[in-house]
Length: 311
Image (cartoon, rainbow, N blue to C red; front, side):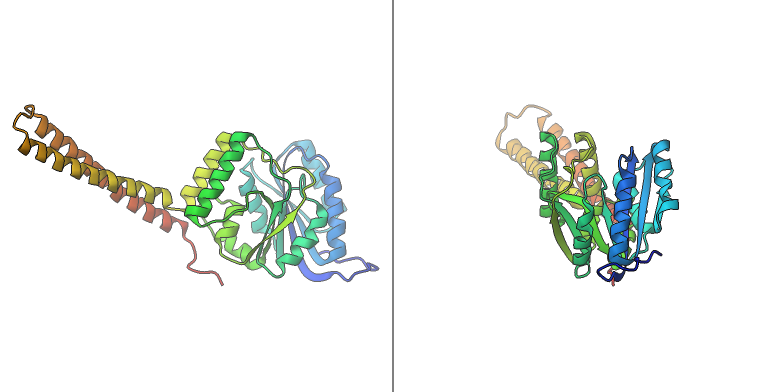
């Protein structure tokens, strides 16, 4: 593990800091960024590592990144077998990190000089979420979808994610251990950072570039459904409620049919039996839907295999 050079004006902190960065496509300026990052970490912390996750880099860019292994101490490159979702790649880096504090960042948008500030906060609070002071710009439909999704999470899932939250996040070791203990197929860092229940604070900063996501409206909608259905049974509860209401309406309709048949002697032949049959069928269908929704919700909860508590 790297040690700070002698002669620095300030004594490096005796903590181990891991920095995790996912690199995709073309890594323009990555070598300069990593060198500057290494210099800062070397001057600030007694022990550190830089974990670079190769999420489908171009071959020429991959050579540039791996050349840093011979130049700088404490740099690790994790190469994924193919391109995965950004959050999945980020989790790959988080899981292999060994620091007391693990900070994730986007080298294209997150300034290096903010790292000591967020790590300092992290020493008092388990999870520090970076929040852009610059509004994250998307197309109108994507912006509206993000606001609706975050509102739904606050209102019905109990997860309060800041509207301008970025991937600049710092975790303590126990928070990381809790994060990686989740086993569902869809793991989203910013969502789980709130779900583990540890102390949570925000770090407001100005990105070097606007942290605009590259996801399309369709991708955003798919991810929103994955998050909600992976971690919450609220949609199933909504379907359950809908089924109960529909079943009750069918019972009322059956009562209405009987009342009409008794009070009106000129009812068309076959109307009563046909209507009763349809009403009974729909009542049975909605009852089945309610029961299935409850069982599916139970399976979803058991599939998570979550720990009862975190120490």
